[in-house]
Image (tube, rainbow, N blue to C red):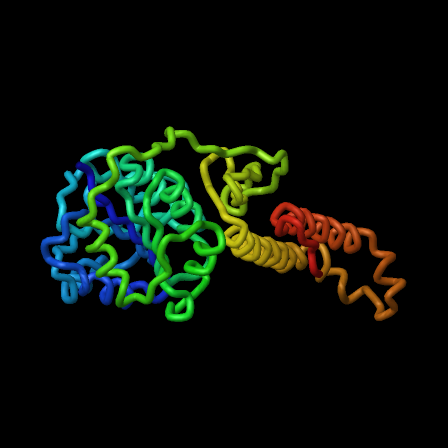
Length: 318
């Protein structure tokens, strides 16, 4: 008889200490495999397993592509250009575009585990900013798995737990010290013989709205998944509304700096050589057509960049 023997955990800001506390409370004979995605930079030194092994009674190691899955092991997603995903009996490191501004993505891990193992999966969302993990946890729940979220008031960064609670019918909202014992309890429970399994379909519905992808500039389609709204481009970049809002802010700033750089680089050719000829009278300034034309072109170019990268549903503040 099957058990809940696939545990997937996602964390971001404040996640190292949270993972140390959680793993220290797991028994050495845990009859389940644990998979972890922790948001970090791509140039991370790669010491996370070493840090976590100091507190964990279970061996912690970086996941390797096609590595077989064993119980009583903790597999950590390496930083870099791949998502950690789970297949039947093995681990996958899958190259692909970022989801919710991150690679590896928590949603990608949760979604792959729910597709491969259905009700055998337990999803855990810990401390972190924004809302990566919310859609994945909903997918785990939809396929019969168990959803656990750290108490937001206790988390170093409460956004991820709060968003998961708002978007998913969570089974357990627990302080960090109680999550480990609950995982051990669930891993030792036998699943009911008859569970309603959800077929492997995405359930995505396009709303007809389209925006510009902040990362690649392609068309970003607005998609409804259950009660959640997501945005996806043809390349595969996927955003939740909060993640898209943050990337739009970065894209707008990038467009503004590009306009300023263009002004600095081209102004000497078109403006500075005539600056000594321009009286202080503004009407005389406007009479110089080359200067006015340059300013107009740069303004239009900057405005086009702002319009392409504006936050959906919001105006442009200038």
